[in-house]
Length: 277
Image (cartoon, rainbow, N blue to C red; front, side, top):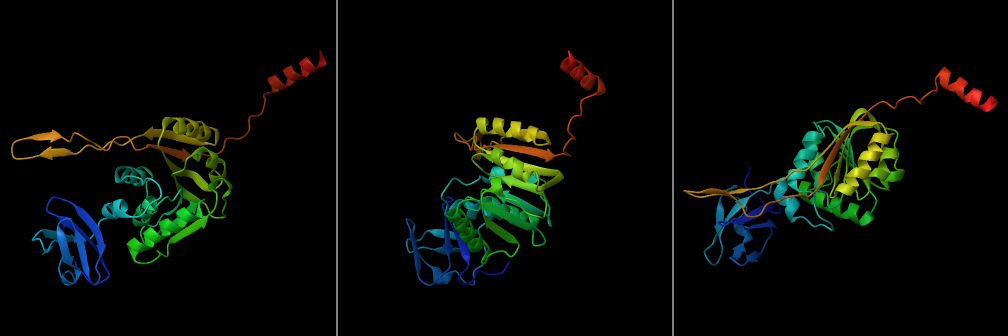
């Protein structure tokens, strides 16, 4: 790994695990542990440390995607990494895929999808609110250093959205995702996967009914709970607090639209008899 350079992001980490995401620039950076001369960082390797004017050791790391997501600007709650990982896995995302998402928020899911599809893939993001789309793009460009060329952002209501190309992976983070299923049913290919994240069970129930009515099958819903453990030389026990319920993940597969039901000959003659009587 190359040494740190100017204008690069660095994750300053104290010995107790406190973190600050800072850009390496001319001038000092101050915290409760003291002041760092940022000009000391260029040329150092990841894992090395600098000392504050109070003698505290601050370790230098490049931020992971998880680090960045928790530090970036946002208007709304982010999707937690535990859910992002499940969304990518159960959504079966692979390098080279073209995927569509709606509900960009601050861009956490978009960043995750961009990493999953790689340079050969493409992410199409549909966001109804221009201010959310602008903030998400700012966060994404800040992480990548530029706007990724394989990201398309469309400011539109997903309920009225249409495009000529079809995709086989769709991801939703919307307050009322069931309203989007009619339009998305024309975009997703047969056999394609739709993944939706909703915080409460009432939303999931309405989503389930709409999916069943719009030729989706293999519908499953689950939640991910994460509990960390504490360890020392003689004991091991779970933390008193955990990241519990953050949302329900619903996964469904698009199937071929069944043909309209045609009444049998017996039904037709019965109806005719009734009309004649």
